[in-house]
Length: 351
Image 1: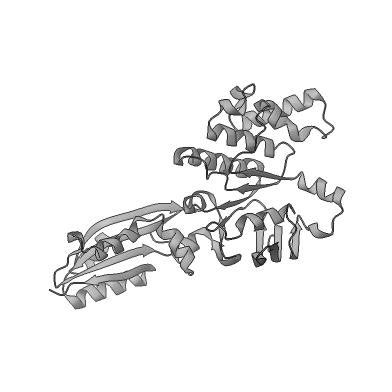
Image 2: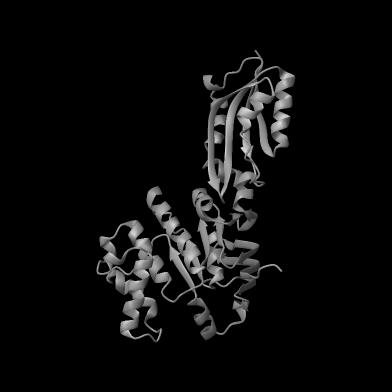
């Protein structure tokens, strides 16, 4: 039996009225997020991703479509019922949204004001949360005394104050440097495992999707143009905007620039081909280069390679110059393709 979704968006559209007429920010989008998943939504600025994620919490009611969270139809709830449901959906933002005049502990305690907990219980809960996000030593500091990463940790602690089972992250790492971004993503991954937290991340950074997400939806002009398992999307992107995002994080695309610049690195002899090999399935384990060199009378000279782990499987590939008799090269490349490796001949020697 299929696992039920904790978040179900069906045919969501959001139209804004502007001086220039109606603007469709989200256009007939359907998404399903399973309990305990880390689900990414990626798109360039203006793609509609922030508007879509706000619809999950009904911070912006959709013009049409349905929002079902934990099996409840959010659009049919009373104002009081919706307030109670929203408490179980935490949210963090790009610019942290901390109250400058309050200390760290006071910021984290703020959502607990009407929780019915005593002052002692609130104090204990705040201590517990600050320890959870590894910032307990900063409880008396003010936001101005914190680094960007520390501010985001405080924001995460505050978002978790009411024990939510869903955390929405709106460009939560965009204002952070790469090292700090990695530490915040590692924290979110740990919270996902330890608390069983369902996390929805919107971002324009493909590195974030690659690092942390189980599934991803790619948005462009208010529509979801592609969605699925992160490994599958990286290995076999179908849409041009997805390919553009992936190229932005991969050194393997630099070979096109070398070709266009007629770099000496990619100059070929008559019996040579410039080939890009890419992993497109999770089960590639055979040492391809050495195996093919032994099986066929070809020489494979690697120009550069990029292999990383996505969803516990190697992904990436190799750009190489393959030398040998033309028919032998073709047979070797067919052998590699039969092993579910992408084979792309970029250039053939003509001298």
